Length: 251
Picture 1 (cartoon, rainbow, N blue to C red):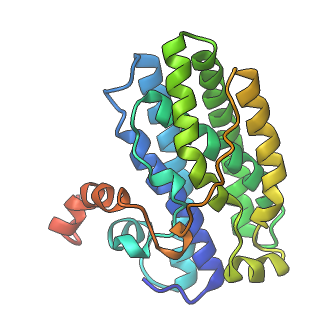
Picture 2 (picture 1 turned 90 degrees about the vertical axis):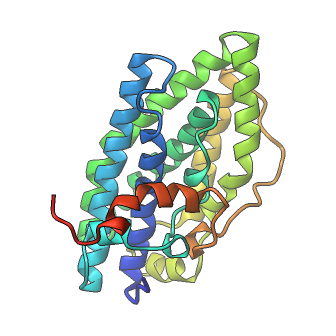
């Protein structure tokens, strides 16, 4: 789906981040290490899904066609605009927590600025979502500390997860032409201005939990332009199966 409206494309990107990450977290339902974690991850997934619906509904409204369902279930892999970080596999619990913590800190910084957008709808979605992502960050940081200060095995797994996912974090702070245009209009948040805040919060949390800060350059990007890792396609095939098999059905 080609989005001619820049604001619609921006909303689509933000919606896809929540949608894809919600799907990933939903895969933990019934499989998490503890019942409490199972419920927490599912509730976080529902929060992200609600944010995704708001962003995708707004994108569809601006484009004058479809709705959040057609955008979620009717697009192919190359038409998704989410960050590469959110589509990475769940792996073990440490992998999921590292991915979640990185995106939670970014979401808090992003929504804290997006509430001041000149686009009233984007600002309203961010204001509602900000309360949720602050809780998400408390949850993921709490577990980061517990695993880091737990057993040698848990600390090693967490360090490995942080190291493996670090390569995807640079994309969080890249701005392309579309975003630069919307930044100039006071609509979009400049992701480049979020990096120092994100880095300070993440570095403090890692050091407090006994981890080393990765030195590898964060070099992977392309998700916002539809260039994804090998992991998104299989996930979408599973997520979209019912709607693709029975298009237009009412339940």
